Image 1 (spheres, rainbow, N blue to C red):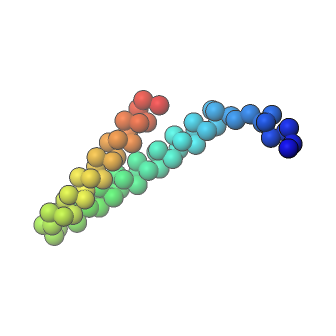
Image 2 (image 1 turned 90 degrees about the horizontal axis):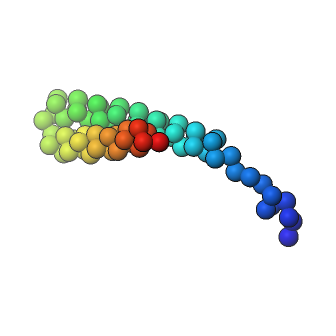
Length: 70
């Protein structure tokens, strides 16, 4: 087996930055989906769409808290 495989180092700073960008992207997507579902629920009066919107809102809050503590 080649010893070079064991000599590589992981750049933790770059990994954390990629994770942070992914969290921001997912937060934006969830917030946009929340707004679209709230709008659709308002126009249609659908309780199902409202429930989906609240689920997306909860997810967005979770991602925002994750960003705040990282």
